[in-house]
Length: 59
View 1: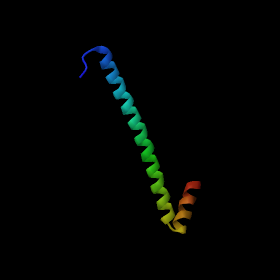
View 2: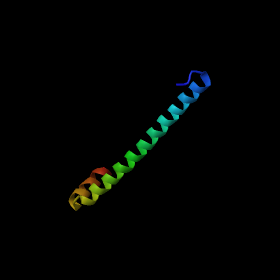
View 3: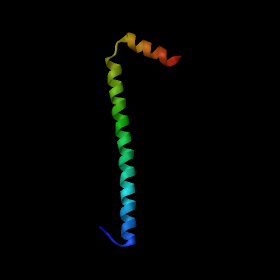
View 4: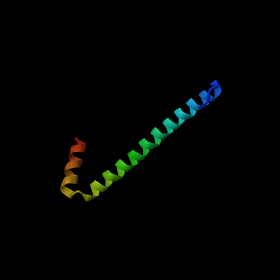
């Protein structure tokens, strides 16, 4: 563990950047996975269910 101030500032800065980057990428990956699962569920649904969902969305 660094004891001098510049090294400590670099450590804190890199930790903050790493945290922000990981959070951004995690949200992006979760969004893509959610979209993929939603598309798969829409493909599997019947025409009646699809039409009912579309009617609810237009009102």
